Figure 1 (cartoon, rainbow, N blue to C red):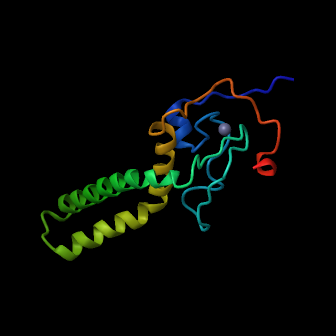
Figure 2 (figure 1 turned 180 degrees about the vertical axis):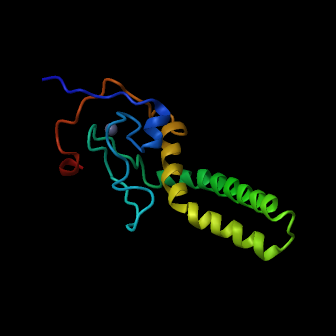
Length: 141
Ligand SMILES: [Zn+2]
């Protein structure tokens, strides 16, 4: 029997944190926000893609996290500036900037790695014809 595979668009698959090669398997074990710390699967449960392609591969996600953090701090401080009507308290802006980064850190962690895998890694592309893995990769790795 042929397996029915739903095709997700690239952005929808990235938003749902699906495997960049098959867009079926999950990259993370749970949701971004929750009581448990986010954990990443080592391999795709569908196609068997190893997410950490080489040791230190996810260090590249640091640059994406940095860009996220700057954008979030600037946005939060601009919103504070507009909402408070040009308040010039340094403590207020420092608190808002730090709080925005702390509150957004689960999002940053999750999507910096997703962006790295989806758009910043040469040679890692969506393959609509990828087959469900035959063997258990955890046993063979
Ligand atoms: Zn996969």
